[in-house]
Image (cartoon, rainbow, N blue to C red; front, side, top):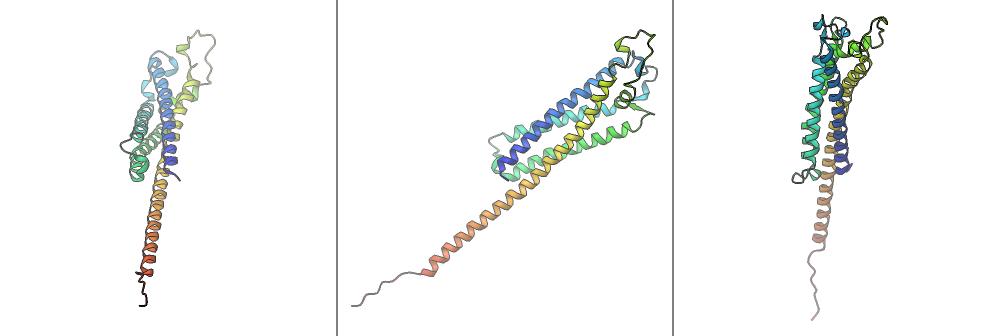
Amino acid sequence: MQPSTIRNVQIASSAIIIAFSLAIIGTAGHSLDIYNKQRFTNPWWMPLWPSHFETRGTNTIIGSGAALFFLNLIHIVVTFIPKLNLLNHPTHRALLTFAICLPACLISLSTVVYAHILNGNSPNLDTIQTWTCRFKNAKQADEFNISASESNNTFATLCSESKFALYGTLIVFLIQGLMLFVAIVGWVVEKWAQRKNNKEWKDTGSVEMNGVGDKGPHVNVQNV
């Protein structure tokens, strides 16, 4: 496994995570924005019972997405700093990846677990995801003339966005774990290859020195 291949895999993984993080922030942020705008006016959000809804999970997902975005952006920027020359320093490159991926894995995993726990409190307490997914197909009475902002027309979209934000964070966790695994394996392989090359060089030098010693000095004796 070449050092350039390892670096390219890590950079590509960080770029994918950045894209996912932006999408997670966008979808979770949109669903939270709609809820905040309609919670006191839309009867589908039960304005008289605001304590029924739990939004800490959505806020956590947004914060997690922002943290993952900046961590992986730092990883890409530092990787391309010429002065560090990480391509030729496997230990430094592995330490950088470890410093980025370990907190990223902890953040993403804890976010998924926390959001899943909050979703499990339904129906006693509902999150945006559990509420919109449950009532996205509910029909309202035809005799009432209700505007779009006072209906559940957006619930299907909010349900999909909330699910994407949660499961997207899980995907990011898996990618970060893969990055960490590749960094460890790559470091071990590079160190093993480096040690093997050093050993071969020493063995070659020893053989050459032994060859010179066996021949000894040559003395030309002539009869007088």
